Amino acid sequence: MRPVFVQFRCEPGKTYQVAEAIYDREIVSELYSTSGDYDLMAKVYIPEDQDVGRFLSDKLFDIPHISRTLTTMTFRAF
Image (cartoon, rainbow, N blue to C red; front, top):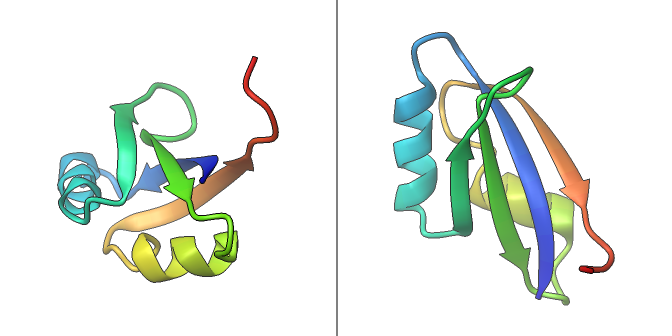
């Protein structure tokens, strides 16, 4: 499994609704509210044999009220 971090910018007033929708899909291992340019940050474990972009698009990015995402690939944990 490959850990990937995804940040979500939500439409104003929709952060909690988006967070509930993400959590309900049981895809993320951790989900946090954050300060700064993005409203939420999720840690997602993606199977090694899966394409990251397709996996995220199919599983998360169709949730309503997400206006932007930022995906950070990881390489090694220290």
